[in-house]
Length: 388
Image (cartoon, rainbow, N blue to C red; front, side, top):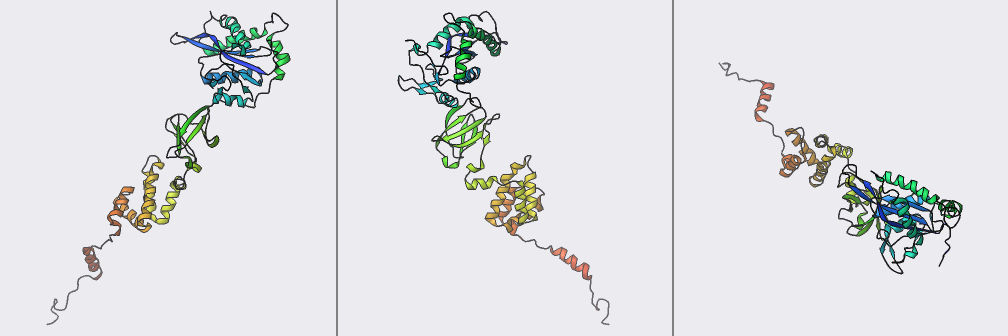
């Protein structure tokens, strides 16, 4: 049955059966390039692009480029039952891939996959794929391309000829029909193109972070041990629990094992730890006494990176809680008498052994010398014969 398609209603998409080739400049190896084809059902205006893979990233990017080429969006999107677009094939209720569905939501279009083994559900794209296979791919068969960009530039030239070619049984061409009838019927593009996102599942660890792509991102500590959904784009990592976003981070690249931590995600006692810095440690030490201040400054300056001394300073804080600030000041004074750069361990040892409680005794010999210098030697009258 002939069905009159409404302008701007449907777009059909698929991969062509035939492939093109790219020559590797270094090895001379021929790399196969898959051909993506999109057709507007009403005007049969087509878009074609080559990709080195048929993975989901290429599939999504092909749609983004297609909408940009058409300058608008159709109300219905009809793909074949590919894994990159459809997770579960069903006659009545197919399950759309999450990323593909998200892209369709971004462009406000509805995905209605073609029925399994029903090529007539995609008559335009099926027909155009056959034509493009001979018109474009075969025409470029004898040319050599050394990059995907070169291949796509050649495809665009041939695509313009294809769309401008007059119809055989009616007036006009695909391009003229598109400009006259269909372009104005397309829905407008969103303000920004869709950014490809990948979804993963992760478990919140005991340190209230999730591990994704060997990087660590914090979530509120209340979700420890819970499974969460993670949405990753080129620049952002978002974390969802029961479809509600609970965290968002700038995506990290580079050295593996980096941490992205939001202070608000921490328990209260962890939060207080992170607020300490060198200025606060020194201010606390000055409140205890001059010797403690000198010891803290020595600990901070003994490391190549100042932050490496924070743990020792925190240990000193805990010693003050355990032994009292008075004893810590005395222990620091004792440690400074041994070395100008005391460490946390030496101060801890002094407190454990009670050396800070030992009072300094005066040297008896020095006392004698002091008395002698003051009073001199005293001899009686008998020494000088005074009794006689």
